[in-house]
Every structure is written in structure tokens, then in C-alpha cells.
Length: 219
Image (cartoon, rainbow, N blue to C red; front, side):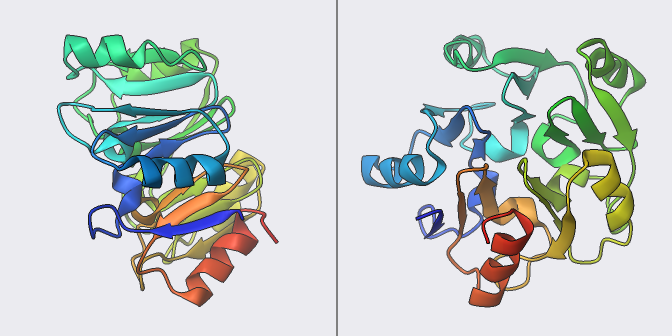
């Protein structure tokens, strides 16, 4: 089974609370063992339960890939110590006013799609790590991370995206528009995905799930 439909404490916006790549998954500490085990089975990667900025909003504050985990510099020392225990990825702390990195950066391999307003110093820091950077808006939103969910097989975008071909070419992935949770265009809010499977918000409809399956390469 590659798909799991869930709510976290009756909230279908599960993408705000989790983050996954093909090498690790981060989830909040307030989830039951049963739920964590179900997610671990679908995504098939090690799961770490953490807090970020003293909240459970893991998906809002985190971005990254299989090798790097990007977090803002407003974390507490004990949170940094916890995240350094993630042996699958190197922790990179970014000093930016755009602290909701999950909303502002979308990453695949050595490619970053970023908020056009992201500071030049941060873009240069990412370039020094070997990342190719592209700045653009999606559906007139600068928060490109909130409008994008991708794995190594496909990229799902905000339903009103008009630059699909540009983004598809940049990531070298097929890209399509879609929604989650009965019409929300901010697809990141309702999805935690990697190449093994995905967890989707509990209000997501059958047609929405079909589109996710097709776009992220599960059909």
C-alpha cells in the first residue's frame, strides 16, 4: 500500500506537520505510535519525532533533500541537538527572515525553487552547497514551497499554476496541477510524500488522490 489517508488530531492539513524524503521522515512528537508506524510503513524510511521552533509545524519550517535538512535559525539548542541525530542528512541552519522554509523552498537533488524575495545571502549559501537556484512565483504566490509537492518521479503544483512547463523543465520532472483536502490548492499543506508512497489529508477526495497518484508516479 503506497497511500495513507489521515488526519492529525482531526486536522487534515497533515503536510504542515510532517516532512519526508527518500532517506528520512520528520513527524511531531504528539502522534501516537500507531499513526507513526502506519506512516513509516507507507514511506518506508526512518522516522524521527521532533519539534521545530517549539511547535509541531515540521512541514512549515523544514525543507531539504536526502542529504541536507534546512531549518531556520530560530530553533532552540535542544532542538538543534535532536536534529543533529538524524544521521541520514546534514543539518543546515539558515539565517533568514523567511523562517517558514517549507513554504519558501522546494528541493529536489541539487535544485532549489525559491521564493523570489529570499535574501541574496541565502541564495548564495545554497549555491555554495552546490544547488542550482530558480526564483519564481506559482499562481501569483511567492511561497513556492506551499504550492509544490515533489518526489523523484513527479511534481504536483497549485491548481492555478500557469508556469508548469518552466517548473517541469527546471526539476526535469513531469508536472501537473492538483488539489488536496477537497479543493485546497496549497498542495504541500495536505501531503507528505516520497518515492515510496505518500500520506494525504483525510478530506482528500478520490479524484484528487487519482491526480496525486498519476503526478507523483504511482500509476
